[in-house]
Length: 252
Image (cartoon, rainbow, N blue to C red; front, side, top):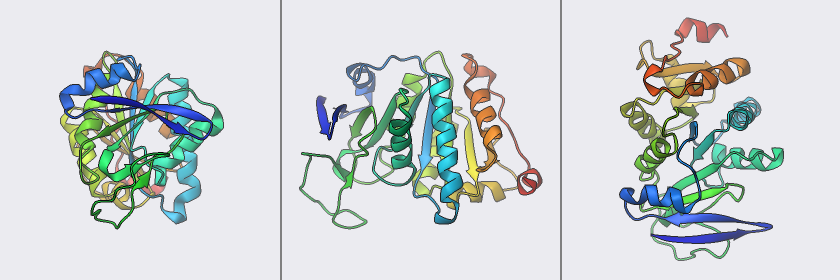
């Protein structure tokens, strides 16, 4: 496993490149992260244009709550959608919570990074890393979604003796995989409806896994309360999910 510093304009970010998931404990140590944070795993993709304003407000709420609760946030780390948004908000607000980007090494680049291009399913372009993350873990993989098990395992490592929660905004098939893996770990999921795609699909389901809560993206206080409830105790076995019925969601 190698470690290097990525030099962005005006600052540098530490990055590790584990080759096996068994390397994750060492990777976390190399990054200088302690293994006892409350953890928010933020998943999703592009922001729905019609809901961009309220979606940005929701990411701001998530960011400020992470800061207040001294939580670590794990996200995809690329310069797109909500992954870019949370990095920019963290920088703009001067927040100090650890923001860890986890994504496949083969699909991304950075200043002074790789320029060689293999066949990428969306075209001949690597995604830039978002420059305002505090740490990066670049993992093996040839497509987005290969990082999902790494994200879940890193969240488990970082949240030792604390609790963790996954928050979905918009999202597609990669996010569906993320949710499945979160549920397998017993990690509660908060889906912010009215942000499009998978989040809205979950809102329409009359029956959901008991660990999945759905909250409208514009219900800011409910989002804060749900995150606080998910992370507020160190006893993981005491998770009490917030199950919201569709008629309540529709009336909000």
